[in-house]
Image (cartoon, rainbow, N blue to C red; front, side, top):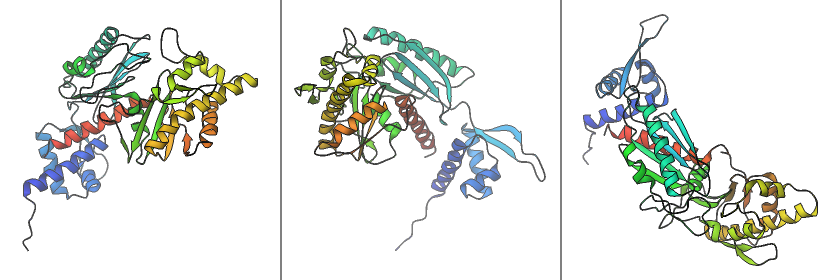
Length: 374
């Protein structure tokens, strides 16, 4: 049997990937530190650094080590490497961050929205925020962002990235095209997904679970083997129209339950979060009765999720979903169902959708940067 030895070009490429990966993970390194981190010989590391500097990916910082012995030069990633835009289109605001391959946020800008919102309003806010973020980023010679990752508080068409208006949608009235609106601000792709899916990714550490979002809007993400299931058209997890029960035991959709108890915003399908929390925390028989009815409604919706997706647990997030009184009521109701799973609050509670989108953007930047060496 003939043994095929790897080519010299392949070995160089692998060495360069390891060295570049070390620079991504550390702010600055000497050749000696690189050799220790990667386990690659010093001469090979030196050649790899030379190639990366010539390619414009790494530069000599001009700093030198101090102390005994021969001084060493510090090298670091080039600040001219392209970054990414991370976009959150939420009911109350459009938020855009400019991040680099290390995940550092170099600019953040926001435009406030009022609900219900129409495409023209979101378009103006999105373009203004993107223009400001890119302007701050490219100052000093940094190139145009390589990609944009968008989180949207609306259903997203998987094939086109367009936001889809469904009946009783609490946020955007009409369809909207983030890909088309942002393509002029980045040199590469625009990735769009629903905010609940991104929040689930921020929570994911592998495994199988469902992420139930209970806020002004209702949503659900199903994660199987660490991957968010988007469905054929991207509309998996749209739980608002799942059948559950109202206070009288009648079959209603999940979103209709909130209409039946007077908790919708005026002229909108959005849930009045402040009013709901007030009723959830009310004392006496009225508060207890409402918590029981709410728990039953949540359990009814989750029964379908548990039966079809078989999650190991359900993470309950959103503006009011992880409130202790809500979780207590939901747990009590779910425990009485034929099939039950554990319910818990999310570990990522601050801007989870933005965190999930940012993590994806940074991972993509790193993947694409390493791919330039192949």
